[in-house]
Amino acid sequence: MEKLDGKSMDIVKANIEALKQLFPEVVTEGKIDFEKLKLILGEEIETRNEKYEFTWHGKTQAMKLAQTPSTGTLRPDKASSKNWDTTENLYIEGDNLEVLKLLQKSYFGKIKMIYIDPPYNTGKDFVYKDDFRDNIKNYKEITKQTTKANTETSGRYHTDWLNMMYPRLKLARNLLKDDGVIFISIDEIEVANLRKLCDEVFGEYNFVGEFVWRKRTGSNDSKNLVTIDHEYVLCYSKENFKSLNGVEKDFKNYKNPDNDPRGPWVAGDLTCNKTAAERPNLYYPITDPATGITYECNPNRVWAYEKSRMQKYIEEGKIIFPKNGQGTPMYKRYKSEVKSTKKPFSSIIETQINALATKELREILGGQYFDFPKSVDLISQLISQGCEQNDIILDFFSGSATTAHAVMQLNAEDGGNRKFIMVQLPEPIDEKSEAYKAGYKNICDIGKERIRRAGEKIVQETGKTDLDIGFKVFKLDSSNVKTWDPDFDNLEQTLFDLQDNIKEDRTKEDLLYEILLKIGLPLTTPIEEIDYNGKTIYNVAYGSVLVCLEDDIDLDIVQEMLKYQSEHMPPKVIFKESGFISDAVKTNAIQTLKKHGITDVRSV
Image (cartoon, rainbow, N blue to C red; front, side):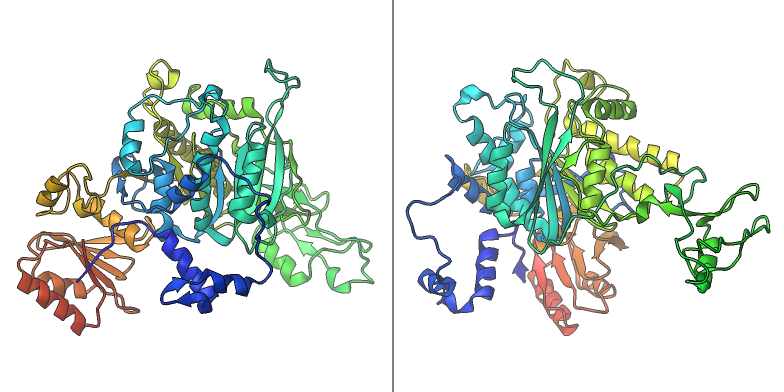
């Protein structure tokens, strides 16, 4: 029985395997022959000592940090989740560096769009202090302390920020689909450095654009010689990217007075500039089924659609007839159908400015609990440009969860089924703040409550009860398995404790979701719990994975598990290492599974 690996995806190993597939001839005795690789690449190699490059103190260490696997896990928190059993959305509390590592196997190449609004390095923002040796332990210590600023007097003002961003962007790129994009909000302090950083991580040839958006209309008392009224959004693609979706910039005329389930619409012209002689098939009368009134077509402007298609639109309620019989029928043009043929403009000036975004959040939460939020309108535009209706959107600096709000709002407007993954460090809130007095202990409390209230508000306003306004909450923690989470400072005690390798304060469900991460299944994978004689069998992904984490496992349980295996492929079967009644039963269980064609049997 194979032992399940307790680490997240080994990125170095994956890179080597990818290189082997591209250039199998450079592999000699299982290792990369770089001299031969140079020959294959021909003259596309930089050999000069002096060359253009972007570097800073700690860059090598930051690269190693991105490649170091995590032994942590994400523990489910049903109590603070919403619609746990049905939702496909995720809210993850934890240091995003470790979370991004843990998501590598399950979400590698599955994210269509990433939006992040990282710390702007103003001297007041929290800076993530990564620890190369044990970042999980470091994370737990940090989240019990007050946040620290990256002051200019630290001597490494830009360097510390770059060391924080570099490994996170490296890991984020892995999660994008080949045609995926990332949008990054930033201001004038780090925009130049971020551009160079992204050129290296994503490739300068994958630069899509630099958007400028107006954040205020009034002057301010900043130390700058000019009033800075704008910020930036950088956009880069993964690789096989074609173009951003064209987006009509002014949607204020789109309304939904009749609660049309297809969303907001405007009345559009139903005729085209042709004559009856030119297009006789478009010249015919149409009848309002509600009133029986018939409308003749103008012989100098025929209908836009031929008769059968027009009748289909009438039956679907897409044609608006005049109320009093006077006038011309119109066509309902839905916001969700608008696909501009124009490329997006680099300036975004019609979105809500910061003051309005703050008001937007205050109205939902009932107080001023978050500084400098982005507006739903701004993020909605980016999502509309970057992905389609069934894609996954990731935000690993989620803050007040504007991205989640925007995803739910867009789904309500166009009938989409976009899913979101929010990741946020639970930064402690100042005890003197209004937010703390209102009961919010950390930023995650604000983000989760915003999603709850925003979702309910959207349902109330639209009347759409089939929207996914829920989210599963997971929290970063050390591994549930002692052998995967050794105490380096007390190895003797660690070895003694391995008589039962599952931590005492962890549940079977905690371990189940760690298994999903380590074998590469999404955290929203369907799971059926089967009760068999008081013991639980987990049927994961419709029989693709069968798990039993009980003690005193006998052959009856193994036979019961076989009833739920997938008809399309042999399942993975996973047990707790110390769960069998005896070694003889374990041996017989493996043989029984082999007789049924199941050879992928693992233990934790």
